[in-house]
Image 1 (cartoon, protein in one colour):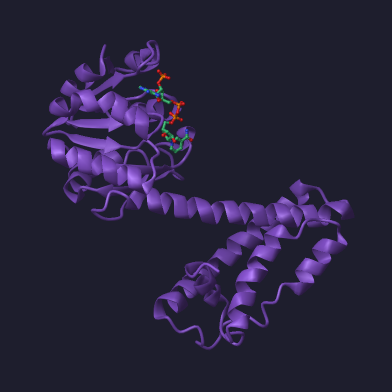
Image 2 (cartoon, protein in one colour; image 1 turned 90 degrees about the vertical axis):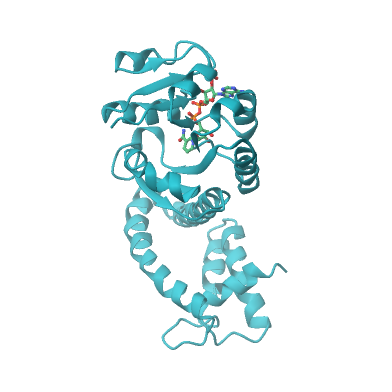
Length: 287
Ligand code: NDP
């Protein structure tokens, strides 16, 4: 492709992103604050820029993969004039508010802004499991989609630049709670002499199979009727046996208590006969 790309920030992730561009033959200019990090990429055909400004001038598309929101401003604020008319793809991790702030800053400077949330670790970039979420300029997403697709599966979420980090954090929230649930189970069986590895071998296919339930929950939540037939009711979902067995094993009940409290608030409000998906109402309306 003839699209000239510049990558600012050659840490673990920026180097992986630049490597994928070079592999696909994109003319790529690289810049890093500390010298030396471009050497490996230059050996693979990249141009090294001496300053961030040189890198920006060399690229139609400028990828920023820096540490955080503050480092993006530190590097790009003095270059707003140079960036005008170009496309900035910021894959630095930022909060939804910070992404919106950067999008507003870019709009004021005449810079086309696309925010990216990378759902992968560096060695996954360009491989099958990698996914990158985008929000901001739809035109930029569509125009540069072939380039973005080099890194992983690209998903565009909407014009609000804050959407990519919001989805990113929502997916991480689901992941952490699932991991905590797995570790709770491992702690429960440990006193019985079961290794965490042995438990992992059973838990992974079990939880994978259970993710098949998300679609049904989604349909019930979106339909807004938690009385739909065929659901497991909140009364039936009582976690008392799990809590008792956890205590019996001498382990903390905190992880399971959290779910039980969400259930109990709906039962207390008179919804015990309705489906498990109803606990989203406890989450939507903080106690
Ligand atoms: P690294 O710590 O490996 O690299 C950080 C990069 O940011 C370096 O190039 C560093 O330059 C640069 N940097 C830091 N502060 C400044 C500054 N003030 N001015 C200029 N450059 C600066 O991090 P990663 O490459 O792993 O991560 C980069 C971004 O990608 C982060 O926002 C991270 O959250 C995100 N990300 C990373 C993932 C991962 O698994 N690694 C996964 C998903 C997202 P220098 O070499 O000079 O220090």
